[in-house]
Structure formats: structure tokens, C-alpha cells
Image 1: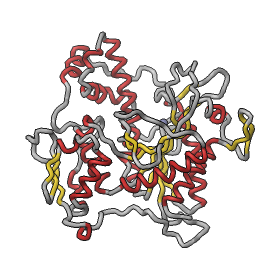
Image 2 (image 1 turned 120 degrees about the vertical axis):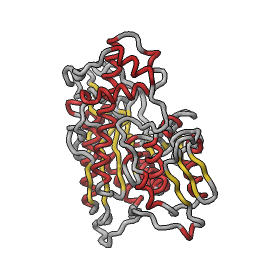
Image 3 (image 1 turned 90 degrees about the horizontal axis):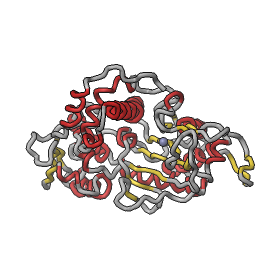
Image 4 (image 1 turned 60 degrees about the horizontal axis):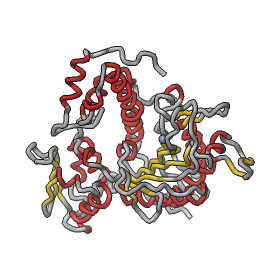
Length: 419
Ligand SMILES: [Zn+2]
């Protein structure tokens, strides 16, 4: 934890004014996003037909139809606007290919089939990025990814993710893959810190229209700004920094590794729940408020035009099925109308627009492992990593980290067509 992280106080009146004014204008960007460089999408001209573009928008990226409010589609092109009224100059126009056979080649092709002719190293020639979720270390409590039950070892999600990724990396490297690490320690990848994000936190709060209703006094405002600055640090700035590292190296596939949890309340007196569930995410199901931001419009188009949706769905089914079969927890069930939308025939696969699966270029498989605070997973999690098997709750079981890693490796081999 950091002492006094917000030394540069703005006068209260200025803060209230800034917060209540709001910035919901055309040209709006999401927090910490750079102005998108639309020229980067020029190489995608004529790479997709109108039919396939429409299918991907309707079925994957914007099932609620928000995208069509900021776009105008003609027979041969689609034009993207900043605002729903289309009063601002357009941001970008994409020309469609007239048929599947006349599509121009994509500017970058992510390998989706093994290229090795060495059967002992079937993933040779492939680059796989690993993103162990969260920062951890001294930041784990600020991230809200830490709890400790009585005298048991503490549970810190970043550590569980890192152990799992280490075991996964060993397996993938033995298979011949080159590993790219989004981060590989317990330090932030971003150079930004909560204390340097105060102004951005105030701007971000201004985007929530109900913010002013929640303001009661100066202390409450300070708490709100502090929480928002922390969130911008560990969620937005950190993932942006990781994406910059990973995208420079063009991996063929990116794997994000997490453990799920239910609300555990007070981290020093956490509550455990009964059962764990498994979920895995493809990028998609952008919401109206997200599509309103110009940078997110750009990210959506880049994901769509890279044609990663088909690969992500296939990969999430391959990995998700292995996780269900191996770890033997049931699939997550989100209610209808939730921010995540069920896709594919596998019950644990959902489309969701997460900053990580949006910003990493190429196909991303975002895994949520067992619940850290579920009674059917917690004893295995605090047992730590070990070789062989141990008796836990009367059952002889391997390390949960190795089991998770082994299931993801098998899914990845399947994804690349390795028998
Ligand atoms: Zn997580």
C-alpha cells in the first residue's frame, strides 16, 4: 500500500464542477486511451465482404446493435462516425471486397496451424504470449485480489496466475513454442502510479452520469477519486503497458490466465462459497457506452478486421473443454442480459469486452480458473504447487496449478491441430 497517494489536491469546488460537467461528447476516448490512428486500418481495405462484416458485427461484436448507430453501411463500404447523429466528420471508411474470392490478403496472418515437422516439438515456429493476470506483490491488496483466512497461507490471485503460467510455459516450451511474457514478476509493467493519475481519475468519474448523485462531502469525493485512480493504474494503465510489449512481438496466440472468485467481503475475514465454476472469454459483446468511445470503435474494428473472432471461439472451445474435463468444475452460468453473452456450443464460453482481450492483437483466450474462495477449490489453492499427488479433503489430487496448466496446454495443442 502507498501512503498519501494523492498529494496534489484540486480545490473541492473545481472538482465538483469538473465532475458534474461531464465529458460525454463526440470524440470521447476511454480512460488513458491515446487518440486512435485510423490510418493503421488502411491496409484492411477490401479484405472483407459486406456480408461477413455484418455477420461479425451482429453476432459477435455488437449484438445489441449499438455499432450501427455510429456507422453508415452502403453496398460497397461502411463509414464510421464519432457521434450517433453523424454530425461530426467521419472517422474512417472501409471499402468491402465484392466477393469472398476477391478479398485482399490481410496485413498480418496469425498462424492457426502447427508448422513444425519435428513431432517431438509440435509447436516449434509458433509464438505464444502469456499474460498472468494482475500485478500482485505489494499491490495485491489495492487490486482487491488478496485475502487471508485465519492462520492459512494468504491467497493472492497474481501469484496463483503466475504459478500456473510458469507451469504452462514449461510445457509449451517443451513443445517447442516461443513464449512471450506480458509480465513475469510482481512489479507493475506501467510506469504510471495512482498518485500520477488524479486528473485522469476525475475525468473518468465525469463520464459516469450518476456520479454527482453520489457526492456527499469532500472526504467522499477524495475516496471516490482515490479508488478511481487506483483502478486506472492497475486495470487500465497496466494492461495498456502489457499490450504494448506483447503487440510489438506479434504472437500467434495470447493466453490470459486468471482465477475467479465470488465476493469474499472483508479480506481478513473472507467468506467462502460452496462451489467453483469455470468460464472462458472471447472478445465481443461491446456495450453501447463502450462503442461511444472513439478508441474502442477503433479497437473493435481492428479485432473484427483481423478476423480473430472465429479463431478465438475455436480456441476457447478447445481450451474450455479441456478445463471442464480436467478440473471437473461446472461451467459458469450468467443470467440473460448480463454484460457477457454466451457463444458457441460449449456452456463455459462467453463473449465479453475486457480491456485485455480487446487490446492484445491477434486471437486471445481469456481463462478464468476455479473460484479462489470456493470450498471445492480453496484447500487445493492454499496447498500450493507440488509434484505428484497429495490427499486433500480425502481425495488424492495433483497440484491445482499443474492441472490447470496441463488442461490449457492440451487445448492449445488442439487449437494448432496437433494430434
Ligand atoms: Zn483475475
